[in-house]
Image 1 (cartoon, rainbow, N blue to C red):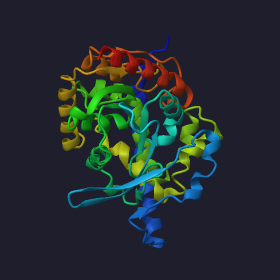
Image 2: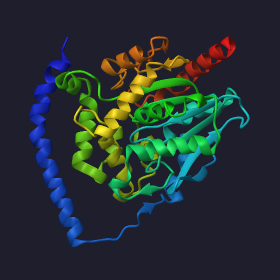
Image 3: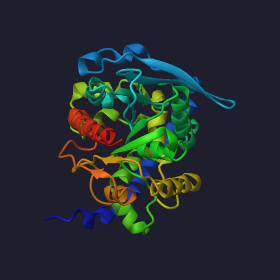
Length: 353
């Protein structure tokens, strides 16, 4: 059997100068374009509602909800969220998306979980989905996303939360858990990571190869990232891809997508503040004794190997159910199955209480 890891480092060494050259060309062209055609774009954009036309035929049939969050002297742009199921349910399931998705990814899980009597909420982070979008990459920070989630929970007065995290939503959502542990009853870990493993740089690069590749593509393309083409590699058909790309009518709306991977410290020499936050999050999670369900796909980029093993070490008491197939964005193909596992898990622990 071919040992893929054996070839990862040589391929990366070969690709690095190519990626660097493309990045130089990309940024030089971008600079020239801005110099020749300067435009004063507004600091915040709102995706036109007509961009989301036709999503009902793809299963996204939910009533939109909007609110504006304030924290101290900071007034955030408008955020969108889905809120389905009985509003007075004693169990709230909060779904956290990652990159480059939005609440659209969870549409099949939302319907199934809500039909089982749970209140199901899916937030669109600023820069994604139907939430407003900063046009400057510099406005997007790890603190922005964690603050948004924390204020969102406080504003809706949520408690007894089952927090479901996926992809980059893992580092954000799990970071917030340590700030409001009294509001979180259980965790559901989907394909995600907690970066900055305490191991050698070489091993770290091998473990995070897929994420480094994604980041390299974004480093080159920036806001001109061809999301539709990239989603095609996740075996998502062209009609459904339109649902994922609907929030981004053109490159000006993609600053959040271009910035988020740069906020994930995949190497030990990344942003020191975020690295320390990830380390403190890991330290806290090692003390977590509430229920945990881990649902990693066996063919997802974080469904096997170091990422999954890390979570199993953090939650030795957690329940681990491998999901066969579906890839990284398996909510698209395995949404009802994931919802069934989560429903059974919640009912079991509710009976224990």
